[in-house]
Length: 466
Image (cartoon, rainbow, N blue to C red; front, top):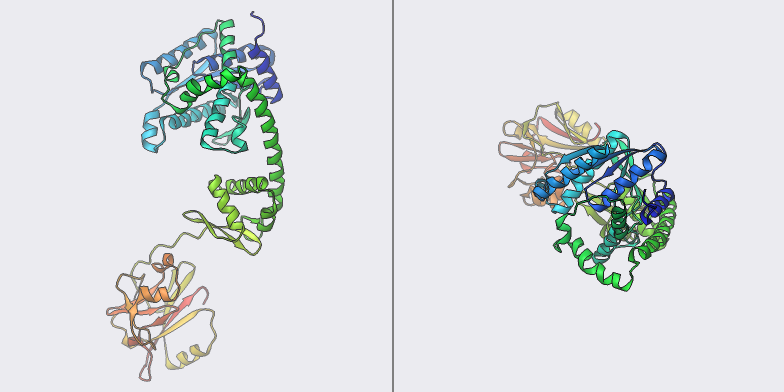
């Protein structure tokens, strides 16, 4: 057996620090066939007897490189068969998902790869182990720096995180996260461990490849121990991030909640240090399944200062007293389909009801004097031309309100009444053969107005409770 390598020592320390591989654990290793993943698989197999680990390899063929992709799959399955390792493989249509979803090939490949790995781990109740190295981590941070990031982004790839797959909550661990790629290659050489090279990794086509092939060599000329220095930096930044997140969580629990649904104490949020306020804002947004990027966080803080903000097409942030509240307007009701009106029948319109009754002069006089919690409009029943129809507003509808000087379109009238545009097509109106006769709660057309000659009176009741 070759003497212990740097990889084994570093990986053992990392696994112990983060309690990645407790005894009697089932582990699914993501294996592409490259040096990193083959080193991970070999390391797990060497640890298996002492720690009673049950190791499974999982390989996804992305079907992007033709014969080369098939070669990778065949290599992994053959190696696992020779080593007596359970191996699960699947073929994925990455290009198809990319076309359907609009994702880049890289994004689509990542989506399908993790879906596959999560499923394999969940089916076995296993920990999922991936072969990310310190070099991968450093490349990720450089990439984020180039695009702009915060402290969380500078911390890089977490050594351990949780994942969910159809009700199963598992752990994803990265035992090689503090090991450099050079140390991986040294380990493979010492173990005479075969691996394959993805030819696309050698082409400066993708952004990450350009970092790897063009930027890292320059940085390494300044510091040959680049990854080791980064590992120390990531640990320090991670400690700071953990502390700030803990403080933000405590503050969130103080500020969140209230009688108005999802809300935050606005004054408390604005009084907090910006580093904590931003984290509390992000926590609140994520709790509501909303985007929590920099733009959304700034909108939330602006709303806390009193400026109403729109987060999504149907989500708003606004102050209600001292609370910053999340408001989602109810989905508008469907337009009212035209239907004949039967006297005495109750019609439900959203949360309200409408009914038309025919009254005698005596009953009419009594109804006019009673203070109601709902609207009543009165029409001369005998002036209605043929049957009444209940429907929504239509283009060109006009009404000449009784007691008003001129007629106007229903659209203009609703605008004058400050009825929100989104609600106008869902408000009821009554029409006869000649046109609109009543806007319940607003008024009636002058041609059906009650006068001294009226004998039969149509009362239009409209409200939530009558």
